[in-house]
Image 1 (cartoon, one colour):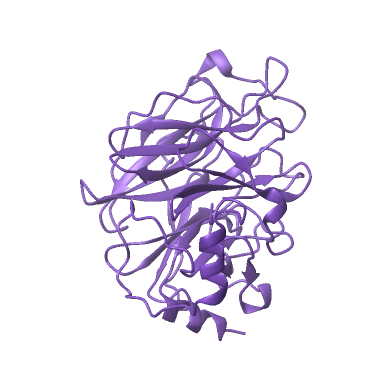
Image 2 (cartoon, one colour):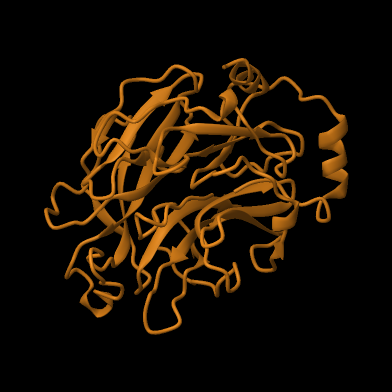
Length: 342
């Protein structure tokens, strides 16, 4: 979540650039989309070129769930004339940072930020991404009455322990005093985030909230992907002081989905301020999509090894105003049904 309500934000990952994957791009352009099983693919499976992909996002200050589609990972088209598939009804009546995970139960699980100062996140589920369950609030920070927020929840399914991990950024004043108050200014209380999480098998009962990731500095917008036997967290370093601020994306690695995460890398997004990453592997290339929120555009970087990165931003086109979401693979018949929605 962006730290300043007046500077609305977004972002999150997809397919790789033409210069990087010319043969796969050609296949995506010439081959029809094949029929696909409705069974979700294992999380470590790379997405073949030409497979249907969806990008969740929101517009404005959090108007609802928007979806865009692509089969090449570069050119994204809004569905439903860029109108929301769901309107927010709970919490602060916002729907920001929507994250969808297609679970082994066949359901699409959606979580989102419900407000700037809420103590929980929103949840709904669907079989087809069109018809959704009643929205509910999951009050994960109710045990911390001084918590300032619950921002940018994300889902990852742990295939080893057969459970979902849901994680987000929260500031609890005084919890990490060594980095408190870096950006306190006027109405801004001074955010100092760490990443917290809960576990669930059914989205009905949840474990006790725990600290998930503390890199020793202000961190937000975490997302997780699996790379072979290891797990990779992409997150934003939100350090505001000492000057200059960081405001970039970094990686951390773990042997287990629930961590601990360490071996933090140098920034992977250069000098431009970035947030809201989403990551996916297409063919043999990792792709990280993120919000270049100071200039109002999306960025894309690609890598074959999560070490060497190429900027593909100039090849990327997305719907106007797109903000912080996630990218995931869908069956062809699901995309076809979504394309009929008006």
